[in-house]
Amino acid sequence: MKKMTLLLPLLALGSVAEASNIRGSLGNFDAMNRTGEIVYGIEIELDDCHSKDVISTYPGNHYGYGKIREDLTDPAHPKTFVRYEQPVASGFQTGFTNFLPPNSAPSCYNLAQNVGCEHFGVHFAYGNTNPYSAVKYNWLVKDASGKVVVGPSLLISTPVFDFTPPIVGIPAQVVATIPAPVVPQPVVKEFGEPSWVKVIKTKTHKTRPLALGDLISDDHDGDNLPDWTNGEPDEVESEWHLLQTRNGASSKKTELTGKAEDMGENGDKVITRRYEFYAYAGPAASIDAEKGEAMCDAVGADGVSGLDVVDVTDAFGETQSFDCSSVAIVGEYLGAQMTEFLAATPFSMVDALQNGSVNGLFPQRPVANGGNTPYVVNVTTGALPNGLAIDSDTGVLSGVPSKVGVFNFTVSASDTDGTAASKAYTVKVTGPGDTDRDNDIDLNDLNTIKAKYGQVVSAGDPSDVNGDLRVNLADHRKAATLCTLPKCALVTPAP
Image (cartoon, rainbow, N blue to C red; front, side, top):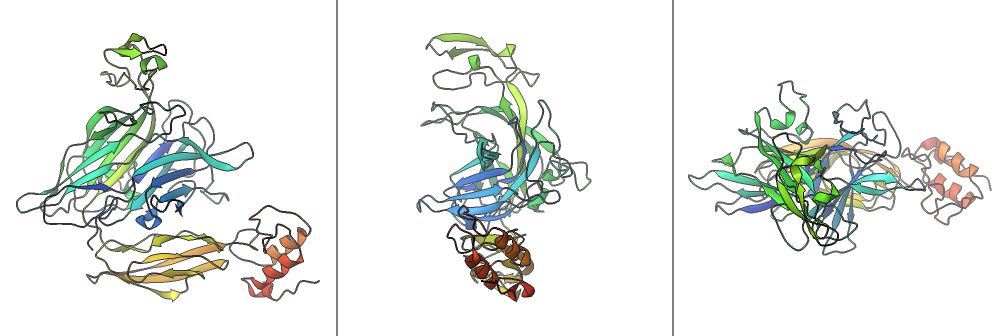
């Protein structure tokens, strides 16, 4: 099957000019921490999505690669979560993000600093169906007990693309639509939380695909253009558009559809776009008290204040006039989404695979991507973690790890066109007995277990190797049988 990408989503190409609705890659996005508190990562929820539809995540932040898990509680509506969290600090991976002072918007790309801005990215691949029905973004915060939990929503969304394949004499075209961010409301009203979006597109397009890491606001390649533009000049397509979800109905505020873009006679042009998100700063008096609709939906020439006098329903059901031009309605910069769309994905191997836990389900993860399926995929050197296997036809890695360790292996693959690739991977597995979570069970772990003899511990404590919530000689003996280092395995615990 020929694959298609948004950064790099996949879709079968046809010869009939029928528009195909494509929910593609989230691309790469900058996120400003405007919460007023330190946050400890981010979680992206993908509704009606399987983990195998997520190809890779981008590690250029203070958390490293995002970790993927799948929730099949409702098999008819699966959910996949991409969680950026780093409990153990190491180098630039600090495991937290400071909050931004008001009216500041720093660069997200200097990891030596922690200034309140992070950069995240997710890459999708799929066949003829949309890989998700909704996307939700949330910061991770600590509750009163110090546990990291899902916190405030981010007012960021991801576009949907309508692609029309080329036919004789008519080039391929793609139309991008950005929906209103999905933000749960504490009080259910007809309209959700308002925010602004500014849309920037490139004027011309190239046939050179960008890697996920190239969809950034900075200029790392030195051509005096942001890297997301793919070396092409950009222009503002839509200066300001107010976005608000609407329950049970649609309106011009629920989404913004862009202009059709020519992808060339062969459909091989690469389309890149940037969506900038800003807070709605209008006062409560500018928002309909019954429906929750922001009535100041036009921005003045200064790019900050509103236009016109509007009618607003107050809390008593009375209609009041409000002068939008008298107040600022465009607030602080919240972040930006950079996306890429191309119709044919080159065959390649994924950049990295996430780590696992003993007896914890390893989410289905593709190792090969793009090109034409089926594939031929094999492990050529090293060994997979115990309990994991790769499907030779699809390149999907899955299973349940059964042993702690650091596993190095090389995967070689080819598609039906004969394009071949290979890549070396490292997957670390932790679990019971690995008390310091260094992916080895050694003398340090045995000594830690011995020091905790007699203690009652909570579920999941790595010192409780046999899972009875008590640490004793039985745990020490069990850990000794699981040792991953030779000298550790020679230890015989005294009775």
